[in-house]
Length: 140
Image 1 (tube, one colour):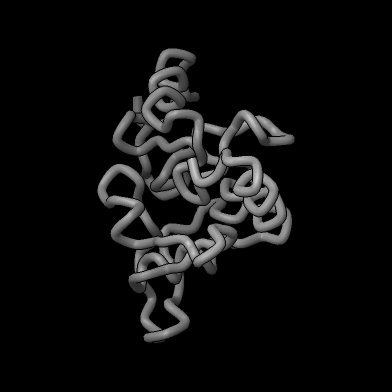
Image 2 (tube, rainbow, N blue to C red):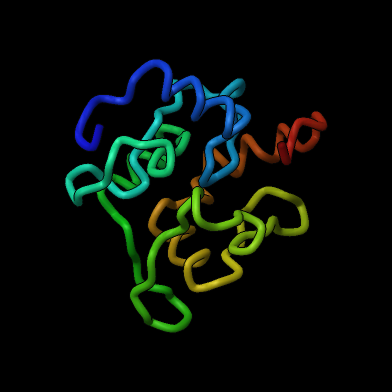
């Protein structure tokens, strides 16, 4: 199953496992203006298999910014580090919210590199988080 299209069955499992949230920026699919994607964490172009361990739910913005990336330079250390891997790492170990829950802070080299590479604090996301927080719908 390494280079196949993601089946409906796999998509259903991935969406349920992610509880309807982007596994990178934590956006909620129910408030999205575009459908979410089931993406390959390690891209197929780099040998990533189409298996549950290599699939994540991603909003369109994170999916587009990630594209084929698996690593990025950490702005603090200058080291090239792997991006956050939702199946192998815990979100809370690499990221936290700022005081008003509008921005994601990278707490580790991987977290900082992922915030940068996927642009996890895009203006539209920050604005949506602000509104959803005021309505009691954020963070998920």
